[in-house]
Length: 115
Image (cartoon, rainbow, N blue to C red; front, side, top):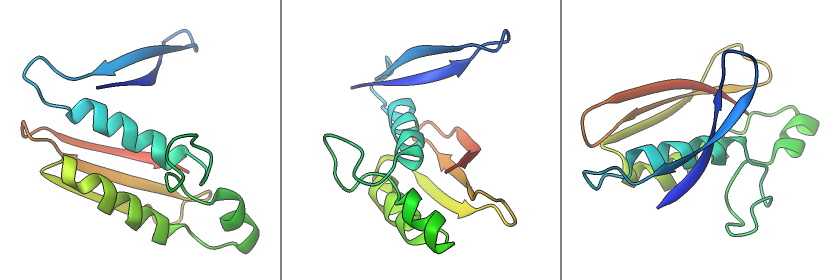
């Protein structure tokens, strides 16, 4: 499996990096990259998966948090990790969500991702 993710360089530029299956056969890095991209994606924007993403324009117009869609994304990706929790960071505008994943190798990944 392969996904593309951006890394931030010290000089202020971004670089695209291929994220693939690890040598030990685990796809944890691939799925955490795909999860982060899904959170940043607008609903219906993906040419392959119509249900991926959150309705960002609707949530801005109605001033509601996309918690329902984040719950659906968590259910969709939970099967790929030993543990996965996605919670809204209190007081963050625009909303940010803390993603905490425990990989199959036991590594804990915790990152705030803005929508």
